[in-house]
Image (cartoon, rainbow, N blue to C red; front, side, top):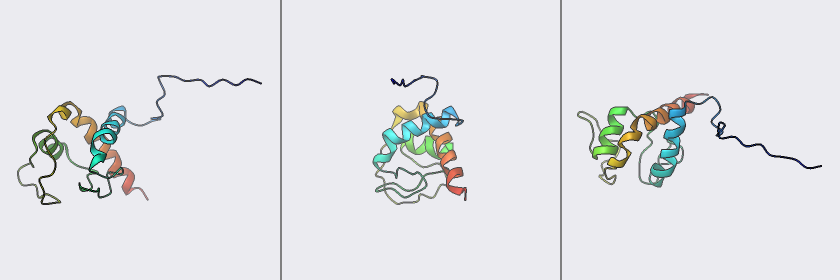
Length: 107
C-alpha cells in the first residue's frame, strides 16, 4: 500500500490563531530569542520577559532604542540596540506578545 502526504499552503499549522500573531511569532523566534526567552513570558538570557508589552513600548524600544516617557525599565541596561528594520512588524509583535500573555495567564 502506498500512502500520500497532502500539503497545502493554506494550512501553516496556525489553526484558528490570528494571522498577525502568527507573523509576530515568526519575527520573535527569528530575531528576539537571541536575547529574550523562547517563551516571552519568561526571563531571557539577556532580556526581560516581554509578554503583553504595549505597542508604545515596542515601537519606542525596538525601533528607536529608547523607552516611552514615564516607563520604568525592568533592567537598567542599554544592551538592546535599535532595530529600525522591524518598524513594519510592530503590530505583529504586539499581537503575538498579547497572545503569549493570555496563554501564560490561562490556568
